Length: 346
Image (cartoon, rainbow, N blue to C red):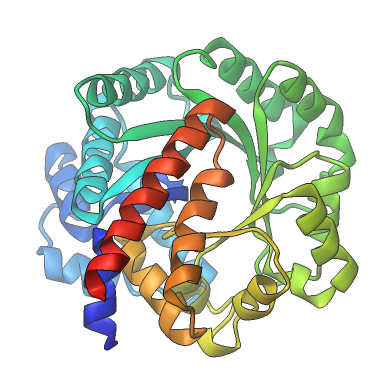
């Protein structure tokens, strides 16, 4: 099957996405609209100029530069809702039934801006779309390592207040040698006691120690990236035994230089060893990719069979932070629909 045909097939499959950064959904066109709204330095640039001059990702530094520009244009709740509407548009186009999205309150606190009004607008819009029969979005409030445990505690307190309205987990992102995982362990344990799941970003390029620390010191229920676990057979066994999943983002890894050649990406080894994996776009607006393309890239590069593609789609629901009963219902629906589509191919 040629890649364009594979993309179209996968596009028809029901899917879930578990690793999606809110600001990473912003496209050059959306950034242009925001720039005009606030008369920023980018307002006079054409969309193609913003795309070629700013959205050229060749390293993590390039990605961080775009993120900073995007964040500087996100000022009011309506700006965030605009991005959320783009998420729902993408979900409808890609047949994505469920997504978990990262929102970092500390970014606004750093800028001296309020958070609750924005979070409430996002949760209200998510609930409205779901009640109207649209796709489901749940939220992970992301803590920033470099801001330390007190900022994390503030984020966790916020998550506890909104856990019944769509916030399902606490995340930890970024890297900073100043604060060790031990300094976050007690407050993350407290978040778990309060019914929140734990998601930890692991560096894409460092050794496997970060994955071990995420498991043993932070109690991670799922780990962002974590490909370096492929270096350690015992660690892969641990992930498999604990059913702790890794969020894999192939295009993002390639563009930032974390793993330049997709064919040599650890996904293949991790998959063969039975490590729980799901695929995501990470920053689809910035990376200019879709979830269907990510799945097709994995299928084509690692020679996945149709049953393996089905398994990968089901795994994304199995690794989600949905309640067990909702998870099982969705997996049954996914499985039945995917089987119908594959049967029609024969």
